[in-house]
Length: 170
Image (cartoon, rainbow, N blue to C red; front, side, top):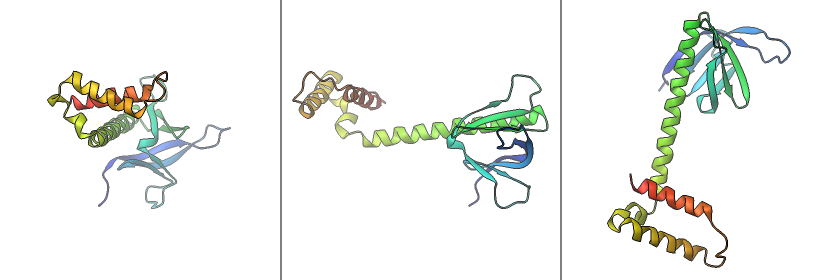
């Protein structure tokens, strides 16, 4: 099954040459969870690929209303692209930004589902026992795990406990 193409078209891309600001025409498409760029529109092999999950940010190159350039940061590398019009540049930025938001939300939901699935049954059922007795039960379990050194405060365990409590309340 072919992944959905979210946006595609011709853009100018800044070359990798650190010493010259040279733009090169590239055919670019965002398909599935990746941004691909090609030398020509009909090329089958991409020159490069940027995973949407690795993109730290995407934004217009400057704040001018007619800005045709945009930049994105991925894996500690800054990519600069330019569209034919400011409108086209905005379309690229908005599309990729919306995909980034969607990707991050899906990752958060997956992480949350994994955390909830891994939460012990006794924690998910805390409503039946009441919050105070439930908290005391968890604390006594933690005390059994770390009985020897009472001077050491295990903040990670306390944080884990509060995370379990927060998720159990959902």
